[in-house]
Every structure is written in C-alpha cells, then in structure tokens.
Length: 193
Image (cartoon, rainbow, N blue to C red):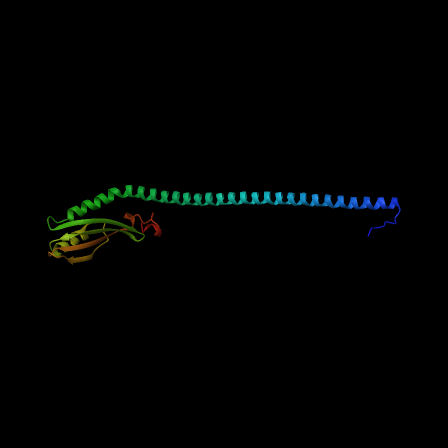
C-alpha cells in the first residue's frame, strides 16, 4: 500500500528540512559529547599523572628525611664517642699510674693475670682482674696489697674456684672513685656497648 501525502508541497519541504536539522543536531550533539568525554578522560589522566608524581616526590622526601635523621643520630653518636675518646686520652696517665701500682703489688711467680678489664658506669669505674694462682692465700695477699694502693675505693673477690690441677682461678674487682671513671660521658644506652 502506498502512502499518500495530502500536505501541500511547501509544508512537505519544511518537514523534511526539520528532520534533516534534527538529524544534524543529533550528530553534532554526539560529536560534542564524544569530544567532551575524550577531553574529560585526558584531564583525569593528567590529574592521575600529577598525583603519581606528587606521591613519588613525597616518598623521596620521606626517604630523605629518614636519611637526615639517621645522619643526625650518627653525628651525635660520633660526637659522644669523640668525647669519650678524648676523656680516655686525658685519663690515660692516671690509668698508667694505677697499672704501675698494680705491677708493684703483683707477687712474683705465684699469680698469673689472664685478663684486665676496665668498666665504667654512672656510679664510678672498676678494674676487673682475672687470673690463676697456685694458692688462695696468694690471691688474698694480692688483694691486701691492692687495698693498700691509693685510688681504689673497694677491692673484692668476685670468684675464686679451684681448677682440675689444684690451681685457683680468681676474679677481683677494684672499684675506682667517680672522678676516675668516664661516667659523665656515658649514657645508659652506651653501657651495653
């Protein structure tokens, strides 16, 4: 069946033009929408790239800050160690006198020292002597001579045990006055070092 258009020709042409304009408007709107979508996607993509760059910069700054903290801690530790070493250089002559006095108190042939250790703390310093002897009496005589030396505030036997062959293994602690120790430079965290 054929369609019959009863409208006059002038009106028919306007209707075709209206349909064409509507179709063109639709095509233009589609292109504008697609362009806007592409533009928005590019803008969001550039914002994401900027955010990643800022995040990388923040991470870099965080690492730099941590490195600066570590270097600062290292510097303060080095300064503290330098102070301790300079104090040890100053105290070296006093320690040499103390050890010379120890040599004078040492009995010939009866004792053998195996270790001499210096310990420092906030309450003063100590000289720890470890060794072997032929008899416990020789260790006692040695301790009596140490007590007569000036500079030790206390001399005490920490350990005195008999070995397999009858020798006596001993440990003696000689306390030092606070002014001979390095306690003023050591902190509680440095005592374990």
